[in-house]
Every structure is written in C-alpha cells, then in structure tokens.
Image: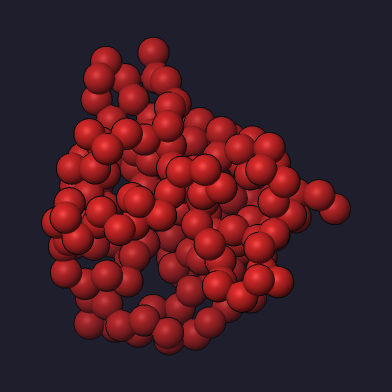
Length: 164
C-alpha cells in the first residue's frame, strides 16, 4: 500500500536521484547537469512549514515526490505557490501523480494559499492531463525560453485558484 508522508532528511539521496532522472532524460526541468544531494540540500531546507515537501512511499521505497515552493520573492505573491511533482521512472503510470497531487493541493488549501501555479514544458501531455484532472486552467505560454536536448523548449503555465 502506498503512503504519502512528509519528506525526511534521509530521503534526500533518493529525491535527488529521482530529480536527476528528469535532468538527464526529460524536459520537466531545465537543469542540464545532474546535482548531488549536497547541492540539493538548500532546496530541501527551503521546504517544510509553509512549503511542504511530500513523498509517495511503498514498503520503504520512495517512488516520487511533490512540493510547493515560493512562486516569486515579492511580498504580494505570498498567496501564490508553485507546484512540482516528480515520479521515479520505474514507478510511472501507477497513479502516484494523482495521489501526490491530491495531497499537496489539500495541504495548499490548509495553508490558505490562494493560487497554485505550474510550469509544464510543452509536449509533456501526461502532466497537462494530470493538472486538468485537478481543475488547473491554461493561462499562458512562454515560447522558446529554455534550450535543452538541442532544441528550444516552450513552457505552458497552468493555475488553480483555490479560494475563488
């Protein structure tokens, strides 16, 4: 049975491995070089409290994670967060994205956020479908803003207004 729980410091190596899969094989992140757990520590430390970081785990194996992060540093953006979901390649297609998304959005509501934003690289149709399932609406496209895998990448932006 899959459980969703708060990420722990001991999870950082596997969270880094999952992230690096996306660095190396997808356009889900625009990082081009894999990172080490030490390099990822600052990211980990920025989560907790108002910026939750949760994992999907089964039989002691972390299979994916979701997080809420600051959208922008300006104070007027305090009611808005950016959502990230990453699933280990070996565990994709098992519904983990839905489980993580459901829980992280529940936490966003509990924390009284007003808007959740997601940037999705164009062509990532599974992510677009997942967001649509939870009521996210397309709100814009930035064309050719990242260069990865020898081509320019477009980023689609989706938002969910939690307290309309």
